Length: 331
Image (cartoon, rainbow, N blue to C red):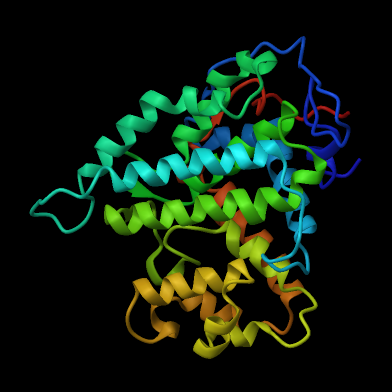
């Protein structure tokens, strides 16, 4: 079985993302609170050989395939679990409104974010319990850790691709325990992840969060990576939009509501000033690539190299029973 199929059919021991309607309680699963396992650069080898890495990258690639050639406005199934996840994200959004920024001398890193985060820290398990059925209640403390890790760092008041990866890991865990299923694939990206992006952008703007480990103009984006991967997959074989068009303001304004990639570009142009080639050099270079499929393949390679294989990012990743550090096992 290929790694691409893994999240749908073989997500480690005891559970799977299923296309049947039957519930699959992971009866033999001993849930644990995830913890950091990558403490030094040589530990990165353990990560790349781990079941967690195989399941995580497989999950990303499965969703990449699922949204290929589809607009955000494409009609897709919305399950009860998807609706509950959106409601959870709506709650996080409402808490931002209830926690306005405070007056402070520093322009960046508004300390009101810590008040907002403390609320999430306190309520995370209750929020996750609204999504997870009662027979899987034992999984809630483990899964909730990934939700708490997905919204930024409350000490540094920053956000980056490691936090984004924690949200993808959160969704992957929900697949592994059977809360999310095969036919939720498109909704996971278009409805849940897209709503997550909206909430993260609101957090970043409201509390003036710093980019975590930003490479400045040499990075793809200050905050996100996955919507560029999935967004480029959406645009594969588009009848007229080519990579060169995403640096065209008119093309972006007319199509951003249909494509995640263009929505990301719009957000960048709203947040940054000056010529696009100067503030987003990597993206400017990508606009010269001839096809979206080549952009998509290149971004997947870049994501592995710049995010998943970088110690400063992965040192913060947490491992439990659902995303284990032990070496990959076959189905």
